[in-house]
Amino acid sequence: MEQKSFFREHWGACIVVPIVFSVLALGILGALSYAFLSPYTQLVQIFMDESANEEPRDFMAELEELEMDKQSEPVKPEESDENTIPLSSITYPKAGDRYGTITVSGTAVNCPLYYGNAHSSLNRGAGTFNGASGAGIPGQGYTIFIMGHNHTFFSDLKHAEVGSEVTIKTYYGTYVYKIREMKPVHYEDTSAYDLTRTEESLILYTCYPFEELGFTPYRYLVYCDYVSGPKIDPTR
Picture 1 (tube, rainbow, N blue to C red):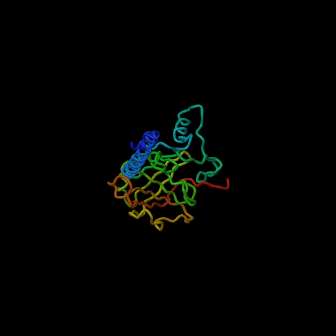
Picture 2 (picture 1 turned 135 degrees about the vertical axis):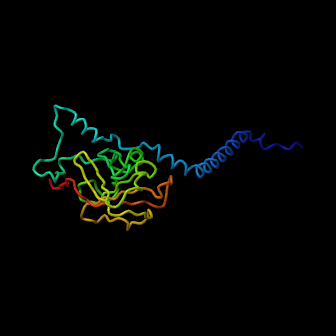
Picture 3 (picture 1 turned 45 degrees about the vertical axis):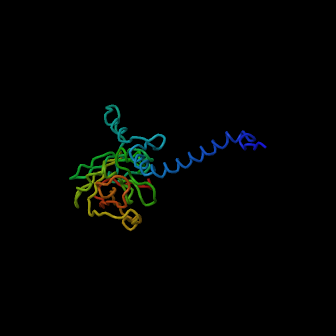
């Protein structure tokens, strides 16, 4: 008696079974590829990510255009008090906006300053942390966090010294801070900064050691005291 083949009686299995095995094989290969390539794709994102807000503004370029236009006068704070700027007289930057430049005396640090610390901003310059209450922009009277990559714009921060000046030129005024301390800390050490301070201060930070690429568990912090620059009055 002839034994009937399963595949002869169920000819559809000839199509379904190979497809099922193919899907399983692709799933296994995909999982293995993700586990192997994930660290490298994260590193590539640091250099290639161009995400930002929909329409970032370049306040410094706009200011330069105003200064070059002989028929227009640059927008300035009220003349009545040169040390104070009404909040209503400035446009508060949004994530991705270039609103200034930053330099550190005695070093090669000299780069554009953006609002926010997304990869797209840090690929072009330094970024101002905007992810917590108590952190602000120059003139607000808060703690200001400014980050730069240790292998690009903040690579020469290692040559900064106590007493060096940090100058931040914004589209609404120029600010000067003086370095008082520098040290490496663990990235999870929240005691390394204080967001409850009532006086303005500046903290520059970058990954540490300076020669390392990609994620490192330490950050190099540069603490600076406010020296000069117009203060933003939130009541006006």
